[in-house]
Length: 444
Ligand SMILES: [Zn+2]
Image (cartoon, rainbow, N blue to C red; front, side, top):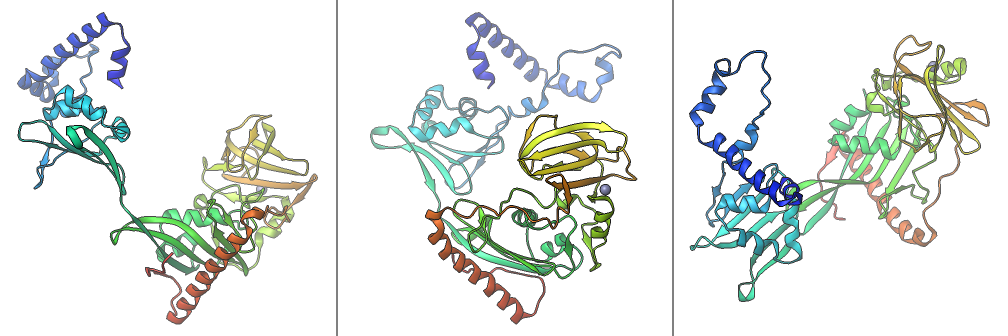
């Protein structure tokens, strides 16, 4: 980037800059004892109260040291640092600007070398005459860029893609203390737990409606290269039983989740405008519904959470109010089409303005205790045609089904996935363990 900036400058400036950097390099590199002394005894050199404008970037000096690891094949490894370009790496390795030029022109894939990231490794092979011979640059866990001599000594580039094998594993759990704990003890990653809550976030209020005895059953991907585990993939099928209601979701190739009958899991409103991971008391052992009674008393749902916790729009809409008053504190009202309005009270800070269009899941404010509030919480109201409804139980518009053209294909996939989910339950029942993760390869 610095190189580009310099290139854009008029020539006299470039010469000046080149001269300047040479002087800086001399200052930095030559009096090494002096620099070391100034570091250990700064008081001897710097006077108090005086501002010293020159700020030496020690990380830049360190990056001047070339680190190589020779391996048996005589490949030299170079770790890419901040600001490195192919040209300066080559010059550190002792290769010429001509080599840099030839490599950068080695066909389509060579362009990937302009996007090197700090921390990447680049492997360079130099022949006996100290000339460039070949280069190897892992682009990801699965892709490697090669630049080497082709026919007639012309450099060519290619990207090798390793075959990734995807297997399905499953996890199943029953909730005793909290959804998070159950997910963890079933072997789910944090990402999978969040994902699971996201998949069912239109049906289940994970912040306040999870109960002891609720259960989940998840099929997810695991990826392997040559039999070696390289990482987790997405959830492909999941079941959640919440207070006796069974929800199932199947991932289709468009990346979206649908019910086994092909209805979209995505709906016009989220059940909770706040992420469950922020809710301290996200779990209630009691079987009765104190919240229901409380809802009747004040026509809203309260979510106790720390001040500053982000609150999101439950659905797409238009901000019709974003203001402060002594009862509601900082509050935001959103109009969703003709029928629905949602209200969010007691923010410490608003994140939207009146008249603004917002998307479902967009942050509109932060939990606080402004107005008439005894402690930090979100007070959330849901109105249908101006009448307050319980957002947890209100009947919402039917979700759009999967595209007709995809329906038959999806149906086949859904049958297979539902069979997987059912099979998991049978295995779990047979083993008689409540929380378990199965690392069985089940094919795809
Ligand atoms: Zn309230």
